[in-house]
Length: 414
Ligand SMILES: *Cc1c(COP(=O)(O)O)cnc(C)c1O
Ligand SMILES: [Zn+2]
Image 1: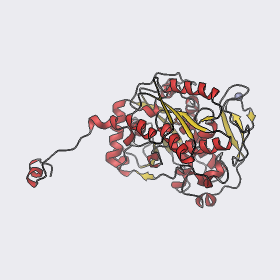
Image 2 (image 1 turned 30 degrees about the vertical axis):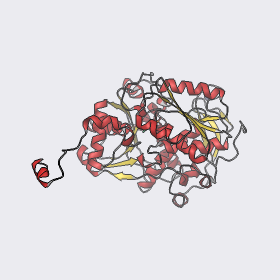
Image 3 (image 1 turned 90 degrees about the horizontal axis):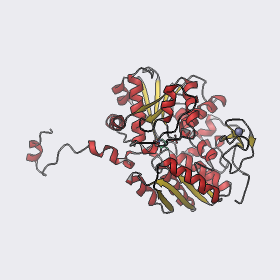
Image 4 (image 1 turned 90 degrees about the vertical axis):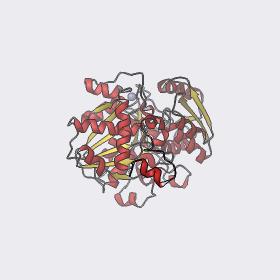
């Protein structure tokens, strides 16, 4: 490692332990020296206003004053994700009996998932901290994002995924070049291996392991964008998919920061987590009333969410309980139904994680847990083109006909 402490990470000031509050200098650290708890970035925000943000670039760097990245970050090649569309979803809302619903469609990012946000911030920090290689263990989308970002930055990537990953995600990672290893094991096995490799390869930045405090802050931009796109307002309810739980906790952190900075009005909002029944450690703990989840062995088609031992699972429980939300799960059949419902009502083809989120939205609406009159936002975090196998068995052309008008008439589809 060339550097042990960072010089230019914008408004970031220190790394602070989430468990015991112990602080240390910014650097390539992720665990507390005192208690091994996870470290989180502390800030001294300067003068960030709605106008200064609105004058910024049309990507996540418009929020650079709220992120651990250099103040001239837009000068350095990165993938420039963000500012994805917030779609008013009246047809889906009507189908479910909701008054006002929005879909934050993060499939519009450079590698078609929300992971480009976290990787862009991790890459910026990794460069600043002197790392030479961008690496990760991944459930698929992170591998895509890391391989693409490293290619654009002109540095080496090294990504590790479970070998049973969707074919589309294997191809959309391999195409960027770089070192790409499939591992015979599930994500939790791959993650453990990555931690061990990180201990040996000192100049490898595993974005979600040894630079995780920086990486995780990238998810805040989802929260900032939703508020800005609503006209600098917070929604009443939000449904967020949960894998490691980082995205959900950071959307909440973003909302809290916007309130503290006076960029939005303070108001109550409820945060709901969405998991697949085949990998539901957080939803299960929530329903049982536990403070801490128990790890599970994943078995679900929602592979991007298949983390059985989620790093931020406990903090998801905290956010859901503090805000009056819940964490719910749906079966694989409901995931497929969710994908089809979103596609058929809004013309948005989400991946299995989107199906989980729509499925949970439907389940919580039908059970009366979600308030149908409240303004609701859901996240579509990835692209259906990467998980084609999930819907391939249940969709098909209406008919196959000869190229004649007679055949069209005979098919009875007019
Ligand atoms: C990784 C991922 C998530 C969840 O992210 P966490 O921050 O780990 O909870 C959600 N959706 C998709 C498509 C993902 O790839
Ligand atoms: Zn600590």
